[in-house]
Amino acid sequence: MTMIRLLLLALVAATAWAQSISVGVRGGVPASDAFDVLPGGPSFRNVPHRWTAGPTVEIFLPFSLGLTFDALYSKVEYERLDSMGRESGGQWDFPLLLRYRAGVGPVRPFVAGGGSFNKLTDVTAPTSTVAGLVLGAGVEVKIPFIRITPEMRYTRRLEDQLELEGLRSNRNQLVFLVGLTF
View 1: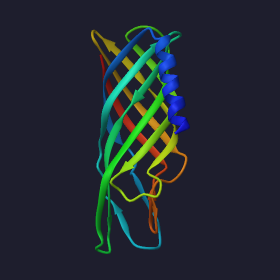
View 2: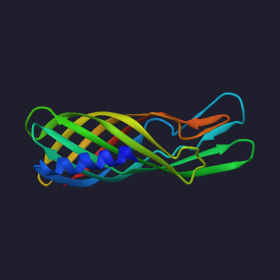
View 3: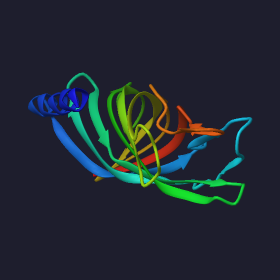
């Protein structure tokens, strides 16, 4: 809970220095599964759902910096192969990233880094919310009234959310995203 308060304080402080604010949507395709199937124990299978999407807001700061906050949702599901059935739910990622843009002009590469909270919903999990570290890189294309930002993001979660005999949450997540902001 303290980490959430610090992230909110950083967001409020950043708005005081903001040059402008941009809102929009971000969506993409995960390149990794939500769960790791482990040897031994009951047999599990990931049921892949290859999309993630949600709203985004960016606060533009001086010195080519920006503070980006997303609320990205993706569906997660696994199946127990010994006929115990499927369990499905949702996975919410809430990354807060500091973004640095290089160069000037309508096309600018960027790097980003920060923290993230991830929450599993409707899935039996001993720890449903965990923190993580996020790194990203991409390019921002600015055309009149819209910014398009394709990027790759890597998230390393600091602990397991789900750990069953034969199945655990994947701490390493890689996702390709495209943002459209106004």
